[in-house]
Image (cartoon, rainbow, N blue to C red; front, side, top):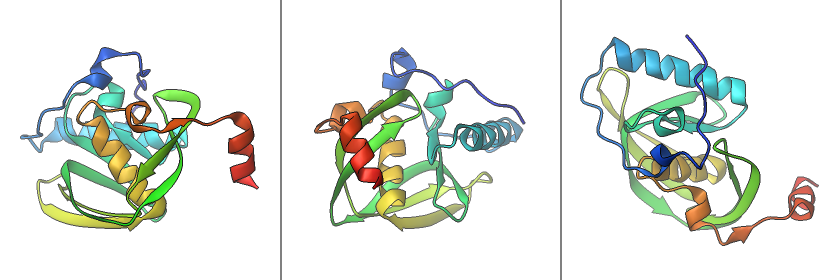
Length: 158
């Protein structure tokens, strides 16, 4: 296992659409293991393969109970709405106000190619949407309503 460098939002790779994963092999497993180590080390809640320079449809999401590995994921259901602060490991130190579904369900493959579904509310739903946007070259800065000030962020912590 190894830590991978997280790319800055200025890197052109983060603005490209990712390709489907077709080979569920040792190379993919190493990527997933490295991404897990990188996510844990960063303290984030989600990480997409393009953030570490790999243009494949691979995402990790920490739902608070486990780190989900989502390969070739698609959102199959959403419900409700939430508006709140959102940040990104590729946009260090800045947060925007973003509208996302309150609930989201994804369908994806695991590291061996088996299909499954996962669902979540609040932060997990936000993370599903945020990370899957990365796979299409979309950063939250393109869908946010506005930047949040430091004062607003401090008020949210109270």
